[in-house]
Image (cartoon, rainbow, N blue to C red):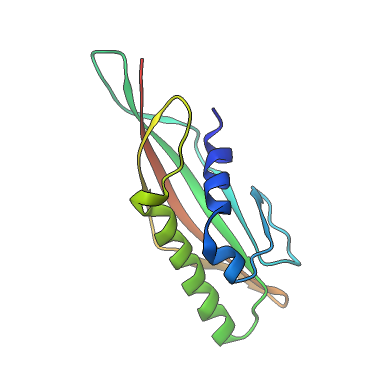
Length: 137
């Protein structure tokens, strides 16, 4: 079971990425010369609640990063909307990833997606999420 990989696989099916020419999708780093999105696990798996039967409610915090090539205000605003729309898509119940060995309950936004840095070549956006799931004991 690799939760980050399974989230990435699900994210690859998001129609917004192809429609908006996000050409690179991966883990951790982003390509500074492409519109790219990546996922970074921030803390590993966290036990939220242990059950008598040995099962656990778990949380898997992660960050969605987006590298935009926009340098003008209109382009940056459009890309802000894009990462928000992707976040909405990712958290919708019908788009939850299927992960072997666990029951995925939801993906929750921990904060709004925001602009975190910009330079002459573009801007970077970030949003924090938590995948909540049940793991049998």
